[in-house]
Image: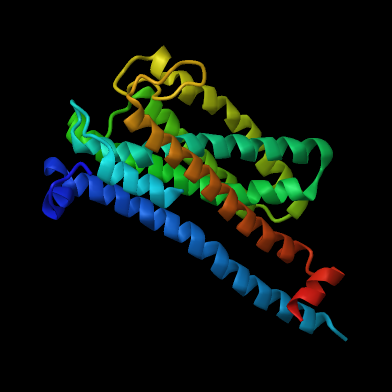
Length: 57
Length: 212
């Protein structure tokens, strides 16, 4: 471990805001990339079911 | 893999003698930049497959790679500016590599916009595949921009033929992150492709059986 304490870890040698905002944005981009396709799949399944029901005689 | 890479990059990598702790941003910036270009290459390759053999799945692959690639390019650009501020003293310069990466971002956006703007499915597929293909000229520009115009962005951190100039305790976690990013990309790509196949093949028997 390169840091002695938690506060030193959060501070990142005075560059804390830069490092943590970069990691935060990365987390958001990754989270979106996981959540969006899963939600899209669910809504697509629903839509396909509706389309098939509508077309069924 | 990503979790291991992040813990390693944040907690155990020694601070750079020049950059200090901001070097930890590189563990996101470099893999996302590599993946941004690599995903564009895969998208363009799928475009070629579609144009030559008219395989529908290739068109789906193009369609599904674009939003992920946009996100990765955005991440590469934004982490680059965040890193640039404390290191170079500026958020943005019109350096060759930064500019060509911005062009890459707009290419991804353009591929998505073009598809949604065109009405016919087949013509939209053809046009986006063409655009993806034409945009490939930008990739060597990004790659060699640091050698052709030696401005602010430093040369590549990795090369396939040479030994890394960094000590192993710095590049091994970087490699872990790059591989993690690749796996992540393929994972979410397949997720999106599955959904899109459902959308296009909804009349087929297997989809009927699946939704019932």
